[in-house]
Image 1 (cartoon, one colour):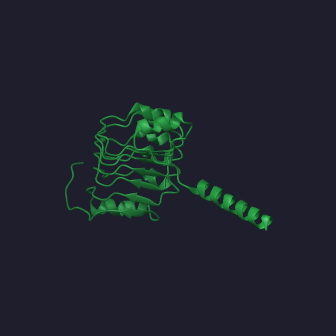
Image 2 (tube, rainbow, N blue to C red; image 1 turned 60 degrees about the vertical axis):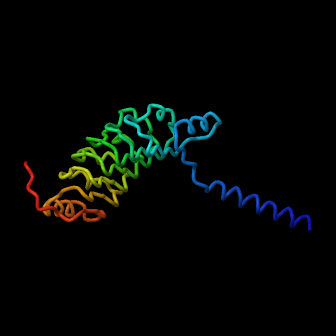
Image 3 (cartoon, rainbow, N blue to C red; image 1 turned 45 degrees about the vertical axis):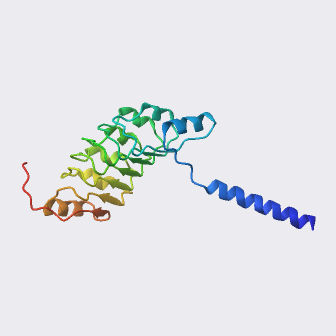
Length: 198
């Protein structure tokens, strides 16, 4: 009897340890909360600073070297600082609905990035070195000003989705892109009939 109770306790303990290990890491929604957690010995891997009215990316983020996920959506940020490249473990970077006027070149050194979301900004083009992000699976650039695409996009072997909805593109531009990326899911709006200055 005691043996079966003991065995039951061991099974319960083991299953709870497994389920605890499978729990996703907590998402911290302020730098202050993340700093407190860090001071208590917790590893900070997920930070969501959406709707914080930031005009600049807070430098306090630099101290969280274990970040895997960083969200800066719906702020007023107009540039991503060079030090973001120090967050070498990042797999997801999102800065949608800001005021970015160029693709953040600093993230091109983040080799572990798998998901990049930069929709609803003012980005005019995709950098030629985009293929430095060799593990990239999803590139979200909806509602920008993008019309030209580097051929290096085809070198990103893991790229599955390229979201370019609501970028004014002609039928010829879309056709070229489809030929360039035949195995990538392309999210495109209806082609425009507009004339662009070269």
